[in-house]
Image (tube, rainbow, N blue to C red; front, side, top):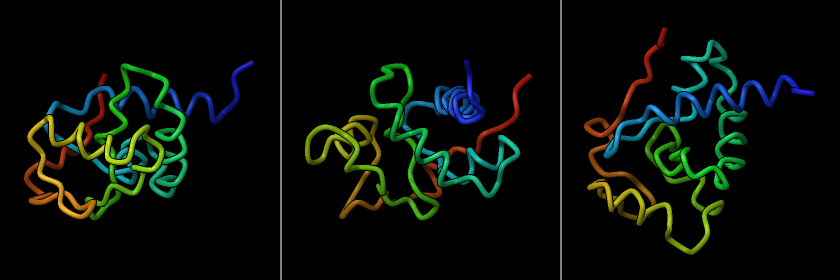
Length: 110
Protein backbone atom coordinates (compact mmCIF):
# COMPACT_ATOMS: atom_id res chain seq x y z
CA UNK A 1 0.00 0.00 0.00
CA UNK A 2 1.37 3.39 -1.00
CA UNK A 3 1.36 6.12 1.60
CA UNK A 4 1.12 9.84 0.96
CA UNK A 5 4.80 10.31 1.80
CA UNK A 6 5.78 7.54 -0.67
CA UNK A 7 3.89 9.37 -3.42
CA UNK A 8 5.46 12.71 -2.41
CA UNK A 9 8.92 11.12 -2.41
CA UNK A 10 8.35 9.74 -5.92
CA UNK A 11 7.29 13.19 -7.12
CA UNK A 12 10.44 14.67 -5.54
CA UNK A 13 12.57 12.05 -7.30
CA UNK A 14 10.89 12.82 -10.63
CA UNK A 15 11.92 16.49 -10.28
CA UNK A 16 15.44 15.61 -9.07
CA UNK A 17 15.98 13.36 -12.09
CA UNK A 18 15.48 16.42 -14.33
CA UNK A 19 18.23 18.53 -12.71
CA UNK A 20 20.76 19.08 -15.50
CA UNK A 21 24.35 17.92 -15.19
CA UNK A 22 26.43 20.74 -13.72
CA UNK A 23 23.42 22.40 -12.05
CA UNK A 24 21.88 22.30 -8.57
CA UNK A 25 18.54 23.18 -7.08
CA UNK A 26 17.21 23.60 -3.55
CA UNK A 27 14.90 21.61 -1.33
CA UNK A 28 12.55 24.59 -1.29
CA UNK A 29 12.50 24.97 -5.09
CA UNK A 30 11.46 21.33 -5.44
CA UNK A 31 8.80 21.71 -2.75
CA UNK A 32 7.46 24.86 -4.45
CA UNK A 33 7.16 23.26 -7.90
CA UNK A 34 5.27 20.36 -6.30
CA UNK A 35 2.77 22.79 -4.80
CA UNK A 36 4.01 22.25 -1.25
CA UNK A 37 6.14 25.35 -0.69
CA UNK A 38 6.35 24.69 3.06
CA UNK A 39 7.60 21.12 2.62
CA UNK A 40 11.31 21.75 2.00
CA UNK A 41 12.19 19.60 5.00
CA UNK A 42 10.16 16.71 3.59
CA UNK A 43 12.05 17.09 0.29
CA UNK A 44 15.22 16.75 2.39
CA UNK A 45 13.93 13.53 3.88
CA UNK A 46 13.20 12.25 0.38
CA UNK A 47 16.74 13.09 -0.70
CA UNK A 48 18.15 11.35 2.38
CA UNK A 49 16.24 8.22 1.35
CA UNK A 50 17.35 8.49 -2.30
CA UNK A 51 20.96 7.41 -1.93
CA UNK A 52 20.15 3.81 -2.82
CA UNK A 53 18.48 5.00 -6.04
CA UNK A 54 21.23 5.34 -8.63
CA UNK A 55 19.07 7.38 -11.01
CA UNK A 56 18.31 10.15 -8.49
CA UNK A 57 21.11 12.77 -8.37
CA UNK A 58 20.61 13.69 -4.72
CA UNK A 59 24.00 15.45 -4.67
CA UNK A 60 22.46 18.19 -6.86
CA UNK A 61 19.97 19.23 -4.16
CA UNK A 62 21.26 21.73 -1.59
CA UNK A 63 19.79 24.27 0.78
CA UNK A 64 18.54 27.69 -0.37
CA UNK A 65 21.93 29.29 0.28
CA UNK A 66 23.93 26.69 -1.64
CA UNK A 67 25.21 24.83 1.41
CA UNK A 68 25.80 21.08 1.26
CA UNK A 69 23.56 20.41 4.26
CA UNK A 70 22.88 16.81 3.21
CA UNK A 71 26.50 15.78 2.80
CA UNK A 72 26.56 13.56 5.90
CA UNK A 73 24.06 11.24 4.19
CA UNK A 74 26.60 10.30 1.52
CA UNK A 75 29.18 7.56 1.91
CA UNK A 76 32.63 8.95 2.46
CA UNK A 77 33.70 12.24 3.97
CA UNK A 78 33.37 14.47 0.91
CA UNK A 79 31.46 12.37 -1.62
CA UNK A 80 28.72 14.97 -2.21
CA UNK A 81 31.33 17.66 -2.84
CA UNK A 82 33.36 15.35 -5.10
CA UNK A 83 30.29 14.49 -7.19
CA UNK A 84 29.49 18.19 -7.63
CA UNK A 85 33.09 19.07 -8.44
CA UNK A 86 33.15 16.27 -11.05
CA UNK A 87 30.36 18.22 -12.75
CA UNK A 88 32.38 21.46 -12.70
CA UNK A 89 30.71 23.01 -9.66
CA UNK A 90 33.14 24.79 -7.30
CA UNK A 91 32.59 24.06 -3.59
CA UNK A 92 34.57 25.73 -0.80
CA UNK A 93 33.84 25.01 2.88
CA UNK A 94 30.60 23.17 1.98
CA UNK A 95 29.39 26.24 0.07
CA UNK A 96 28.72 26.28 -3.68
CA UNK A 97 30.56 29.19 -5.25
CA UNK A 98 28.72 31.34 -7.80
CA UNK A 99 25.50 29.64 -6.64
CA UNK A 100 23.21 31.76 -8.84
CA UNK A 101 24.97 30.69 -12.04
CA UNK A 102 24.60 26.95 -11.34
CA UNK A 103 21.11 27.13 -9.81
CA UNK A 104 18.38 25.34 -11.76
CA UNK A 105 14.78 26.44 -11.23
CA UNK A 106 12.42 23.47 -11.66
CA UNK A 107 9.53 23.91 -14.08
CA UNK A 108 6.23 22.09 -14.31
CA UNK A 109 6.13 19.35 -16.91
CA UNK A 110 3.26 17.95 -18.77
